[in-house]
Length: 249
Image (cartoon, rainbow, N blue to C red; front, side, top):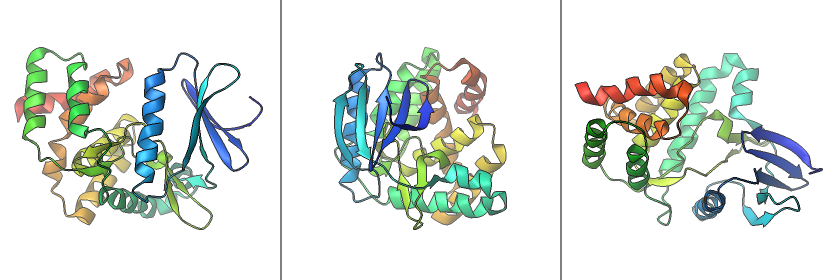
């Protein structure tokens, strides 16, 4: 592909072609997952949130599938934090404000967060007793219908030259409980080894949203078990510690 590569991840890459970009998946990438990501993004578009608009899903000449969407000029919040460490707290608060504006919306046609967590717990590799405890905890948590990103972190927020925030990568989007989405972001920082940012984020989020830290913490074993379903061996020990919390509370 002759276009300009602007991002690369395992099994996928993003290329720019003028005013559009192509998110291109490996030839063996699950077709249903690609189509579901495009559908998620199209449904989030309907909320009015600033995200790249979907143009189409197409098969390239080499057989790979690509999601074609608007190209959004700007820098990720992750890049801005790296370039301006003195503004770390300011950028984390910006991240929180964006997340809260997202949680104020709903997209009723998206999959339910609760159903996704239930399935992920089932395939987490955990023993039956732990899965039972996690399912029981999940069933007891308040049921909401807020727009949740599912992978919300500074790399998935683009700040445009005119200071608008564009949220990208909607493959994990659901409707559900905002505090579960918050716990997920906290866990992503922890898995990246950025403990300070994880704690700063959690403290600032709970204060800004007037949410009890203890309530968000109740979601951590659930989101950790969900992450375990990905089968990443280097994460297993840390995630196991979070899951163990539910056995001793």
